[in-house]
Length: 374
Image (cartoon, rainbow, N blue to C red; front, top):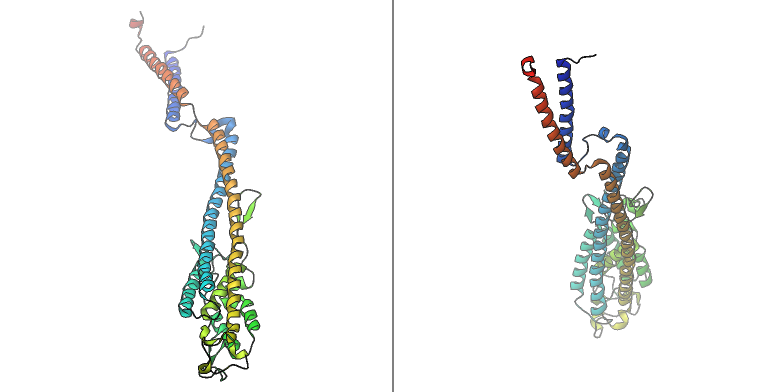
């Protein structure tokens, strides 16, 4: 018959107490953190399921952040386009309603307003989100438009000799000067500003060379959306062109283009209105073309607005789908990692009772002597 020594029995009891104490510590940690374990190893065979779900959540979070950033930029771009349209429409309405053929409104005031709107639109074209120029495409580090004054120099100016329109003009430079002194026809002048190149308008070299590239948002492993609107898109470029020509036109009193008429008379001999209606035809032909050109350009930006709104709607739907997927994945992670607090609390109460009883028995056994036993 084998006997167990008093020391062996004590050591065995201490070992059991340590196991129980470890279980109490584990349950205490679970109640405090809500998690089954503080390391992946503690999840056992389910660790792979948890890791995969966490990796998927991380990837979806990245896509959601991409979508949020893009949504913010699209909103800024749409607001910018709306501002450009609103300001350009103000100028268009001013010229359409105030300038009647043969009438002389406060043309200089309207030109000054056009100059202010032109500067505002250039600032809007150079809109930034952080350090990114939103209308620069992939070339987002470089300002898309700089008002270098080249277009103004190209347009030039025309100041006739009011004492006798048949005399050479006092000032005639650029295409406006050529139009005014009869070197080019009104149709040629219109063609010259409609066909202006982007370098003269102050666009960046990459934009001039069509090297700006496009901007895309990656929304999942397989899909991306193009939300590019370039500063030299037809609508924006034509609005900028029309406003610059408006800003630099001589007043109708000079009747630029009148010298295309070989029968131009002395200014002082003209009868009111000055100059006569037939000599203003060239001027108002340009003015009417500019209003049509500007109106069409404003309408073109509706297409850009619609395209951006479509992209915004699409990425919003993807974002909602990702958020639903994340909630599902978090449920998987919770089922693997989270502990049932009620069950853990019940277990720890049971263990505490058992542990207290074990301590009492251990204390009693450790105090046994032969005299006490007898």
